[in-house]
Image (cartoon, rainbow, N blue to C red):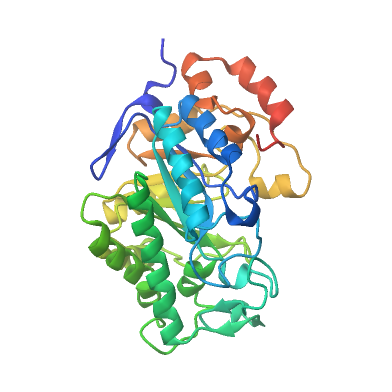
Length: 366
């Protein structure tokens, strides 16, 4: 018997056949010395594929730009050695019958000055700001903006060449792409600034130029969030009309799916409707969406950072919303860290085992 059958129905993203609706959410690990994914990293992702995850999205992996990373143990996606390591990851996941996409990333102003594999490179952001009124690093010139766009595109092309099943661009949580979205950190007066819809230009150029290189059938996902690490309560779009204006140019650029990052999937995005962010984005854009945020757990990941524990939580309401078509895919993070075969255990109804494994292993990254 299959428990929660809606969670285990296949889904087609672009032309990619995903066997179920469970997506492993990207989670930073810092387990790649010198930016090179090891055999252990490959084994880590293979375990999640063997455990029944429909689609794996890797931890953030950085583009070829000196200030993209603040940690030399974060994997990169541009040196020959790192790409060879990622090739091994793809092979292991595919050998286990899984699907996998890299999350392409630049930290922007969230990178502390003087850190990472290139500590002498200045931290950058659209207007030299980490959050409104807080200067850090330097403002990007138009020439440097174009170089960074090209670096994102190059990473996506490398992913396709390595055999990945698509790519995700990290446009959330106050990192570089998100700093262009945010009015408080994007004060530019060129084509990359302006009102909210105009501030999508940087991300839209990345997507459209990638689409031109990888062709029509290679899935492209954009992760975005209303909240920022710098401001958990922030909303770029305060109503559905503003959100629709934000989504339109990104859809026109060729994105296939939006990964809608929230801290708690069950929270409504706007007053007057129970739809969460992924539900609103699907309704307004007509594109597939991934919901994420404390799936299977009773507290968000920010609480975990300050020492609060988490226990398993029923997913009945989540699955009811999935079955109703509010969103299409479900991102699972910490629960998959604790239990690599979380999907198989859910499918088999092994809920007592899930509770025991989660309590014992939630803090591990094995």
